[in-house]
Length: 120
Image 1 (cartoon, rainbow, N blue to C red):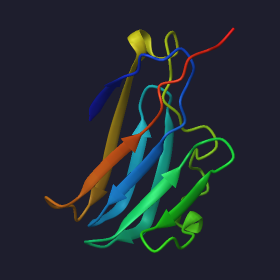
Image 2 (image 1 turned 90 degrees about the vertical axis):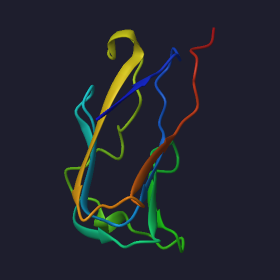
Image 3 (image 1 turned 180 degrees about the vertical axis):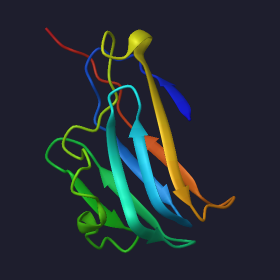
């Protein structure tokens, strides 16, 4: 589990990277309950998936830029997966968990996001 403290005032839709090896990867924002579920999928060593949750994107591709959206489970939350602000995330704290099997020291999860602010 990892806590991310978000200081923005408007939710951010991140890019999430999963670097293999890992099988049945599930990334969950425990604060919102949203998940990205790759059950029945193996991401091999030296391979990776990019899950782009930003508006107008909503894509899943591998390192060769091949569409892998079909590997995402039907009950995943690609449309709503985000990093939340207060009060939804108390103090801006978003708690993420990752599960899967077959991981080793090369396995890595990276979340890239913009800190966004509500404008007037």
